[in-house]
Structure formats: structure tokens, C-alpha cells
Image 1 (cartoon, rainbow, N blue to C red):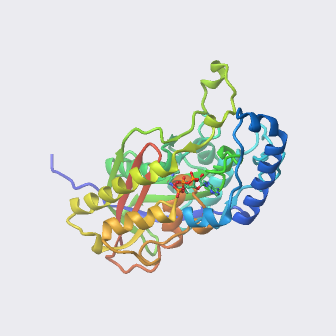
Image 2: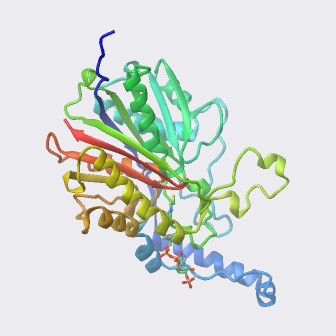
Image 3: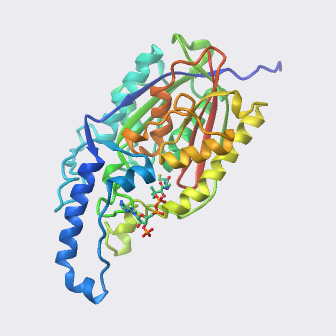
Length: 378
Ligand code: COA
């Protein structure tokens, strides 16, 4: 049988849903500190006896310096700043109503479809990849598939901070193998329901967003500009330094279902120190495998968890600091949007490259996990 070369695969469109509401550091710190004062007053006797730990105040200065985050978008501000509640309020939707993640995913998907010049009828696979899904089944991806009039198949996958890049890897593999001809990959990162807003170490980190990407073969692409995928690379190493113990087993565990360990928690300093060098090495090795050097890359669309982490990774990769045009930062206004961070950066800063220019999308974080795609502007 004659050998046929695998098809060239491109990203032909991307889209974003940015929540209409935002919370600044100032607002978040003010509510946390009011909550902490009340907590300390209410538990004064136990704190004095040493059976409960005093809560120390949070600080805007610390948050901006330690993370680079100034504000974050949230699906709803309701409840988050209420010192009696300290968590967002999402009224439960009926089973015949569109779910929250499907709703925000569809908004991002519509923009991605339009950018690619496609409709639901052109797509034959939907992948929802996110750090959390609001239910195990039916898949959020199938809900989105149905709403957009897409034939073919759809599934959800988790992958924490690297869900989005790992989802794009699966899209690429499906297109290369021929099991799909046009894939919609969606990242409905509704993260604020999982944030422990009573925890000073992590109350400032996350924001909500949804991103979407259309991936297809170059020979079906009609978009005015696209990015060819030259290569994908993934790496995982088990670590509990970023962890969430919420899951279906809780019903059988006879424990507090909303205890601190059932929400996002981490040893942030360890994560910082352990993940940054692994990500930097991964980036260098991925480029080397293609005969490229870091200086050949015109833009790095990096994961957006922490400005100091991004600076450290870039410095290790390039041997110097990078200007915003080379490695754009969006976390100052989006916060850490879980796996969607590198896709937000790609979507907002995908223009401006010349034909033939090389770029890299790269995520890193919980798992641990690192996922990258080397792309070339066509
Ligand atoms: N306000 C004021 N002080 C705070 C604070 C807050 N909100 N949160 C923590 N602190 C204090 C700590 O208690 C600590 O005090 P100590 O020195 O007296 O013990 C001090 O600030 C430094 O804490 P540390 O945790 O070492 O800060 P850091 O510089 O590592 O920054 C993170 C914390 C979380 C911003 C940072 O470690 C990080 O982002 N790491 C990467 C995590 C990541 O990417 N995770 C992926 C998530 S998906």
C-alpha cells in the first residue's frame, strides 16, 4: 500500500467567554480581613488556649508581589464577598436547563467557530477539557454538542492545569489519525466554586473563564489565518502538592463533604520551586526535538498561574527576561484561570506574527503536568 503522509493540522479559530463581573484585590482583601477579624473574635477563647489557630490578615501588596494578580473575573460576585458565606452563590439549575459550564463553553465555542468560518455542522468531535466538571455525566461536551447541532462524538476530560493543552493534544491525534475531521475543544473553567475564600494562602488565586479552539486539517481550513501544529509534547509526574479531594467517594466516606481538603489546596512555594525547572526543561527539549532553539520562538503563550513563575521559566529557557510581546501576561486581570490560561494568552495575543513564525503554547501545574504545542503561523 502506498504510504500517505499524515495530514497537516491547524488551529483555525479560537474564542473566549470573559465573565462580566470582576473582583479586585482590594475588595477581596477587605472581605477576607473582615471575615478573619470576626473569626478571631468568635474563637478568642480557643485561640488563647492554643486549640484554634488565629487568622492573620491578607494583604493586597503581598498578593500582587507574590502572584502578579491584580483582579480576577468571576461568573458571579454573589456570595464571594459576603463574610457570612465566603463562597459564590450559584442557584442549582433544573435538569432541563442548560448547565453553567455548557453555557459559558457555548459562548466561547461560538466565537471560535465564527473565527474559523465554521458552523456546528462542520464539526464532528467536541472535547471539553477542564480542571473540574460540574457533574460526571452526561458529559458537558455532549450538552455543548447538542446545543451547537454537532454530529459525531463528544467527551469530557480532566487534566487540572494542563487539561486544555492535553485536550488539544487529543484533538490533534484524532485529526491526524482520521477519527475526526474538525474538532471543537472547549475549556469551561468555572473555578471559583472550588476556591476556599477563607484561606489566606489561596483566596486570591483563581478566576472564571471559558476558552475554545477549532482544530482541523489544513486542507479544510478556510480561515484567513491559522496556526499549523508542528508538534505536541506532554509530561506528568505525580505530586500531592496541589490537590483537591472532592469526588464521588465522599458520599461513602462519612467525612465533612466540604472540609478544607475537598477544596483547592497547595504548597505553593514547593509547587513554584519544583514545577518551574521541569517546565523550562520540557520547553527546551520540545524545541530541540524539532531542531529549534528558544530564540527561534516569536511568542510563548504560557500558563498563567504566577508572574514570578513565568518570569523564572522564561529566564531559564532564554537566559534573559522577556518583554510582554514575547511572553504575554494575562494573569494580572484574569487571575489563574486553571487550564485556560495559556489559551487566553493565545487567543488575545495570537495576532501579530508573520507567516512562518513559530510560537509555543505551554501549560504547567497540578499533577504535576506540563503540556505544549509548537505552532507555526500560516
Ligand atoms: N497576604 C499576606 N501574607 C500572606 C498571604 C496573604 N494573602 N498568603 C500567604 N502569606 C504569607 C505566608 O503566610 C508567609 O508568611 P511567613 O513567611 O510568615 O510564613 C509569607 O506570606 C510567604 O508565603 P509563601 O507561601 O512562601 O509565598 P510565595 O511567595 O510562595 O507566594 C503563591 C505564594 C501561592 C502566590 C506562590 O507560591 C505560587 O503561586 N506558587 C505557584 C503555585 C501554582 O502555580 N499553583 C498552580 C495552581 S493551579
